[in-house]
Figure 1 (cartoon, rainbow over the protein chains, first blue to last red):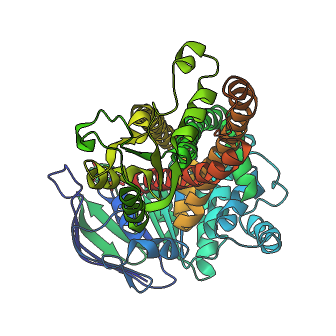
Figure 2: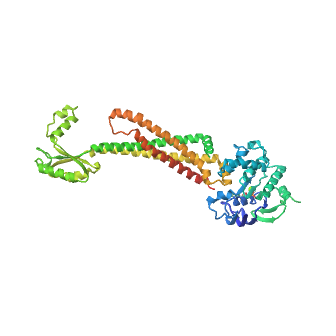
Figure 3: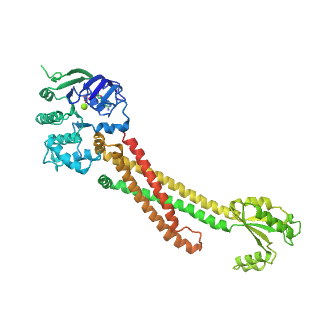
Length: 232
Length: 297
Ligand SMILES: Nc1ncnc2c1ncn2[C@@H]1O[C@H](COP(=O)(O)OP(=O)(O)O)[C@@H](O)[C@H]1O
Ligand SMILES: [Mg+2]
């Protein structure tokens, strides 16, 4: 589903590479944590998979496409198959919950009939039924993130990329969110989640790819995350 | 989609209004320039229809050395007329006798008895009045007939009108240059507006890009908005232009000039499509270029 093949990424006007010789293969339906301290290159992995950035060398393959050869005009089509969730939710403050989720379908030209059918289903999936008319500022952080997740999956993407989705949330709420992502994963969606929250990773026991200064230092199934200095 | 456009227009009302106003002023100036051009053309046509080259013939007491003191013979007159009619540039040739020239002069100067009372039949020689297909080609007649046997002189009214036309052409050029400058101004303003609107909507645009909206979906609302604002400006400019021509130009000038050679309402309808076309092209091209630079993937 996603493959990084000896990928190095050096940002313009930067001397040190953000990623160095990274090779990862993620299969369809997997749930993978990308862990590592701040600045280790987690977001860069996700940005490369989303074709927001391009690899300096090496190949990035997503959903069967070689992103280095993908023409710009085909990038939107790629992104329709990838959902994204961020730490800062990125909701539109002037739209209510329903409208925020519907927006993702409207801009893809989906019919109003289809939208009225699919959006409530998705809101129910993320546990927001009954809150369709609320404005974002009337919701808690956890609820806002659920809206963002609903928007990310409403078009049924095969991949969901999450960049520190629990970074702004309390530990208990964070666990709820990750369990929601787990449910979405069980419907067949491949999930890649960048985080430095060890509690979550240790609770879930999934595949862990650990980055340090842009290098993969560990890639294990059913694993734990023990940040340095945190363990005795 | 339409709702998006409506929302955008409302949120950026002040920018939309300034685009409308600048477009209006620039298109008004462009319209004035185009109308000045048409006015010049109308006047040229009017005068050119009346411009004639006069080939004066030698009469009984000629002063020109070419006549060698003798009047042109009937033979010479026939030759000159024949040669004139054979020139491809010539449309028509009329003969004006000394009596007819005298009458016409009297008529023209009937309000200045001092001039006309001293004139006798024969003071103005008889002549061939030549109408040309293209009045600017008078030199052909001048070069061929000046100094020909029986010809006293060749006179061309084009020479009289030339400075007048030069002024009109200069005014037209100035109006068109001013309009071009204003069109550049509105293009710059559209650029700034589009950039500001894109900035104001960067969250929406960011989400649109994330969920894979096509470039057309992202850009079309901007282009529709600028084209709509531009069109409104153009329509206002056409109205203003019509009012200028109808109430100012025609009412005032026709009282002073009694001249049919003036542009009218129909000329406004003739230049209006050009103004609209310019607006659409400028709005589409400018917003596309701005968005292309601003909204890269
Ligand atoms: N746009 C950018 N330009 C230059 N350097 C960047 C840019 N984005 C990230 N970096 C650098 O790349 C490295 C990895 O960043 P990032 O992928 O954001 O790490 P993480 O998400 O793990 O905190 C950091 O050293 C960061 O400073
Ligand atoms: Mg990051």
